[in-house]
Length: 231
Length: 297
Image (tube, rainbow over all chains, first blue to last red; front, top):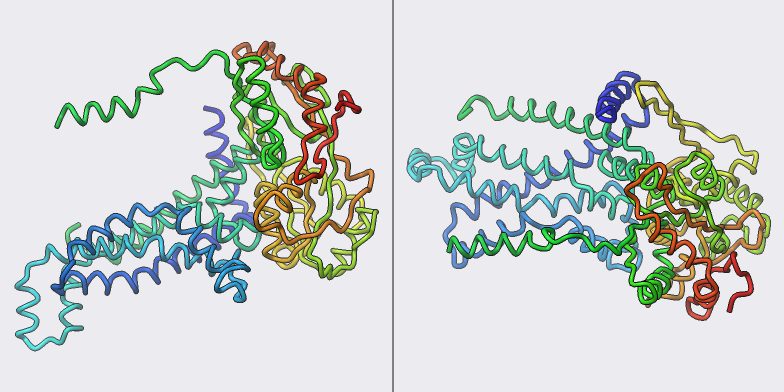
């Protein structure tokens, strides 16, 4: 038990003393994960709308595939992207491997299915009459989508939160594509794994506590965007 | 249907219901013994002879020592002689037996931007790399290789930058320090990963790195696509890399399988195992040299 108390006190000490190393690690984690969440949302939410409101052959199959991809292992994404961007790969000349960009690419692939699937789930339950009313009132497709978004934003943002939670806590992609270089691509999760490898458990758990605290802050922010509807 | 679900869960958990095999020991070791493939030769032979199974957990030396310190394993097989001696002196290990050695090598791209090729003096080579600000990939963990790298940087006389993190342990403030020769993230990459990953990282970045010879040989010649790094500096006596085996002390942890662990330790220094080590070759190249019986064949 002492060990947990030590970790808790260390977490406070690290934050309180403005340890520049730790703050940089937090900065890298947030920058990468928030970028990935933003990009995946910009791609995934419109895709979700399109799948939700268009009728086409194989729609159920597409939804099932997207739902299954939510279980995509990080190591698979890591290996896939690695194969493309390593020196011997197709995009090798871009020198992307072991950069923050590489981590963002991997994380976007990881959570795109989550954002898309949960957008479909949120929008498919909305009353068909909303859409029809909006359209009869003269709204174009974009305006109609905005109306639906306002109605379903609680569910959609829940999807975005889930996606963010997935990337900020994942380690496989960050380790494989970022490489855990100190002061460059080291994130909170890879730093924790390293402290574990070194046998410095206290610092590892302290970092974990900092991560949870940040996650709490971000979620308070998301809650603010979600607004009170359905709360 | 309900029966089916029940059966499924039963199948899921039944293996863990059985009792663990009494003739199994757990060993924490370094990534270099595992990655080089040496353990794949030694362990099956030991099991064949004695019927004792060895579960291997390969980590950095720091983590392996930690496993021993916490009594998670029965025996450790690592390479940081000074720290091992301290480990035994503190009563954590029963004793240390020197098993084998090889050496560290400084690797780099064939283009050799820092012009260190052919240098024997490892410290001068590192100095050259730092002066040229050529990319260098460091393990950056508490491994034996990293311990060696730190010692070498210490010898260069380059002013090392130090970062400290305060944490609390057993209610007292303690600082963890991290020292590096400057240029962090610019030319000095501290990746905090195992030897194998560090090698592929250095290859990808066309950087220099310090590696044990065994892992290097495995990655250079034991794979379809050989590692694209060359040995640029070797032969310095300071690059010696010694491996020791330490059974965890039964006085400190009565639950460890000391007798079985001891059998493994004694077996490793027996003529049979020492000969296996001497004859272990990676693509025709000797990777380790036996220490207990130096002329074992």
